[in-house]
Length: 273
Image (spheres, rainbow, N blue to C red):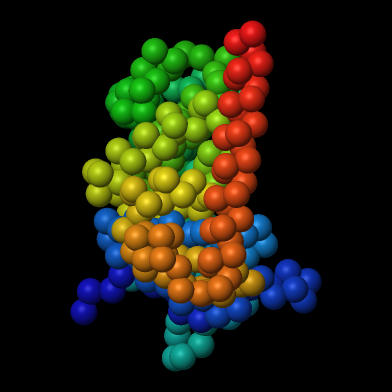
C-alpha cells in the first residue's frame, strides 16, 4: 500500500506546558504542494519544524517517505534515534527559513557546495558543478562569487533555496520564505518556488501570500490554535471558507493588503512629485 510522502498522525507538541500542536493529522502526497495558512501562534512553523525534527514531538507520529521520523518502533514501543541517525533522516528534507541563514564568510557558490561536500561526501569538483547548475536554476549564475552581504534579500533567499536543493531532497519545507523581504523582492523568490512546483517537487509552504497559495497550491490547510480547522483546494478554502475562524483570518489579511496597497500608492505618488 502506497503511503503519502508525509503522514502525520495525532501530532502533539508543547513548550513549557503550553500546548502548541493539539493533535495534527495531515497527509501530503508525493508531488503535492500544500500551503499552511493561519494567524501567528497557530502552530504552522512548529509543525514544519517537527517534520524536519528540529523539534521533538510529545505525542503522535510522523512518517516521511515511509520512515518513522525520529524514532524506531520495537514491539510496540518507540525508541528515540540518536543525533547521527536523525541527521541522516533530515538530509532527505530541504528547509528554507524566514531568515536566509547563509554562511557570511562563504560565497554563494560555497554556501551551496557546503552540504553536499560535508554531509554527503561529494567531491568538491562534483559539488561545484552542481552548485553552478542550481545557481543558474534560481537565476543567480552571475552572483556565484558574491558574498551574502553583497546580495539583496531576494538573492540571498534564492541562494538558500539552491543550497537546500543541493542535497537532492525528497521534500522541501518553506517557513514564510518571503516575510523578511522588501515587497519588491518577493516576486523573484515566489517565481523560483512556482518553478519548483511545476517540476514536481513536493512542498509544504507556510505563507501569507494568498496569490501564491491560490495559484500554486494543490491544497490549502488553515490552522488556528494548534489544530487543523479547514482544508481543501484553494478555490474552496480561500474563496469560499466554511469555518468562521477561516473567514475572519482571510478578511483580516485582505484588509491588511488593501491598506498596504493604499499606503504604497500614496508613497509612490509623493516620490513622483
